[in-house]
Length: 323
Image (cartoon, rainbow, N blue to C red; front, top):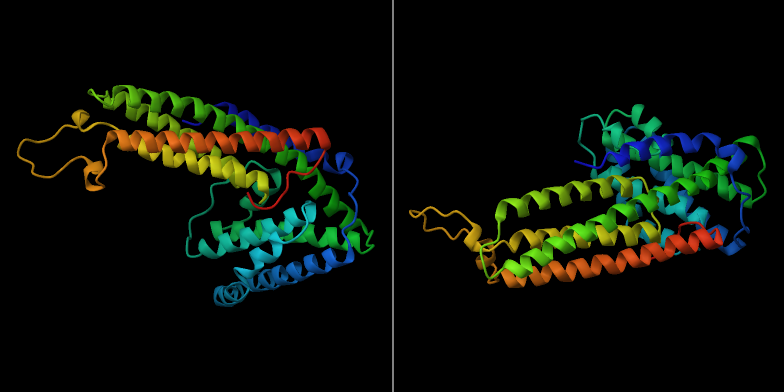
């Protein structure tokens, strides 16, 4: 099961947002005119998606998305790092996720939402696709406020949206640190498990304890997924996501590395119960693949930790492009 600590962390995230107006930072240096025009072009495309979504016409939304993606991702990625890019790139990603989530009628699971703003939208949404569109609209509104401020708007709505967006950056940091903690614990657990497989692959590995450990690692991965779902689309999130993916692949190969000697086979069965043989691999190959993925995950963890520390020292936003 996910660790009880995450429940306390949920409460922290829900409460930390309450004082956003008082603690919001002063906006940083305004982007240049060329950068603003690029951002405005991205915003215009997002507003087209928002209009189609607001009309509750799934066919119109699909047509608009077909025309805009994947170029919209490229245009957002080309922006200068900062709050404006964070909001625009996150909105673009969420609209695409909403497009892929269409057709599901089940109500969203609001217990998974770690942000107060997302939790409130979840309570108002009928299904997951609707929730994702609502989140995208929220980030689009914040980006619109940031652009308006850069162009000289100082009305109350603009200032409030800007303060809200700036305050969210501290929540970004808290979520990222919690994801990093969970990933480090995964590194410790999977490292011990891989070492056990490597040491016992010539004998009969105890399959049941190994599978129980894998179940625990899977629960930890679910916890990381929940945290990543609440992070904006930035370079830091990509680093954390890359570490998560490497752990998932490592866990896959760790399970494959269970020797065939640990499998119970019917004497009357002619089927080969060892999935590795169908891949022309053995337990040693799987163990090495698990170890390689573990090393890749540790590399991404190191990069993510460095990015978090840099943000703390310099007060930079947790943003960036690429990996």
